[in-house]
Image (cartoon, rainbow, N blue to C red):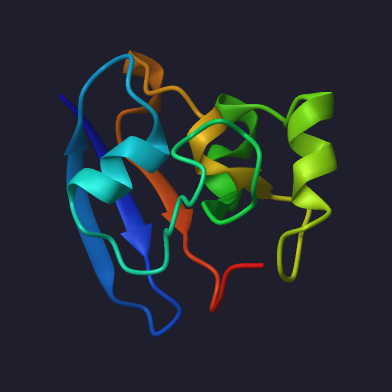
Length: 106
């Protein structure tokens, strides 16, 4: 299992275990992480699973696709490290990944 930590706006850290091949969004939903709504269920047709990838992990995670960038236009308070968690596949090299949940979704 791959460990992923979700950091809430107030600093609370929610540590989870993710299955390889799943997405960061699916991991958040399965673990009841507040603030990750995922209205479209992972179809990249909304921006309600928006997260900020921790600076230490941005290179390992990589950047958004063109379609994801278009959807991020609908997210609240987009930053350089913004990603849709439904588009981040859980892989071995992401063990220990830290993402920050925004104060609200777009």
